Length: 441
Image (cartoon, rainbow, N blue to C red):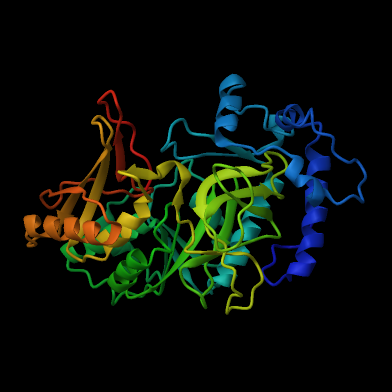
């Protein structure tokens, strides 16, 4: 068994560590894992345990979520991605299914323990320790996210406060009554709790909360969004990233906000051009590709996450040599909006909208039923704010900063939905005139 996840490893030491981990992973999963045995049947891999598998990595095909979903559809319910008999596994979680069918993922006791180790390292990086009281304001379901954080914090000795089965107002009262000083949620829900606090005359900025650890969607590293959250809560925001398939793998350091260090002792990181699949240099935006070392029972080798990232080429002031994603998760490859020749990430619109304090919530629709795609935006003002004037301000800001015109209209306060987990603010109307399922923003 390898040592606990490290955040103090040097780049020189990391290369040898990763070669050892990758070699062990491939020996463990081949040929027992039928998904990868079939996938690699035409690839000749060295069986020499002293060989350098990193040199062979580029010859391995990428793994995609579409392949994993197809695997589970053809071999229900868990697919052939499992390396061991199902009796070896004791944890089941699944993705949110925002973009289609949910993907199920199983863990063994060993891999689950390793995920908790990852959180222990990230808690240390975030300055969270046994004396802290952590509040989890959401209903626990099959989503992996904060199950691991909850159990890891409990194992660390923290007082863990579950907030399932409560209204948002009741969660705020629960938070105050129990003197929680760390909150874990999505950026969207942090903003919603702040909105509820205003309506309930709760002084959120005067609460004991000192830190918010957010994940589940882009936002935590978007300056306008984090500024709005930190102002409302009077607390430090810390961004985090992870996926059901990959587990928790990244967190922001205190010295360098708006970015994420990835635990490279637990995964191999690549960043590729999503169209050509060729590697991109540091400082260039591309798609994050991960190989996970610590879940051999349900492994991922060269997994295309669909997340858009940019590796920071500069040394981090915190001194860690782990790769840092400047701006965190910047968006999704499949959420790109093309409007009259402009390539637009939803996060660019979020930056503008969250910079306007009068905007309580918003929703976007891309209409492709006309000859030229149209972007429509609904903005919901806070009570007492003139909606028409706000819509004009938003339209002007988009035209000035993004150089195209969007159709913006205001809706009455309380009209747009609020989200506990991932926000679904982007809808697409296809060529047939029917609306697609909302996508995560």
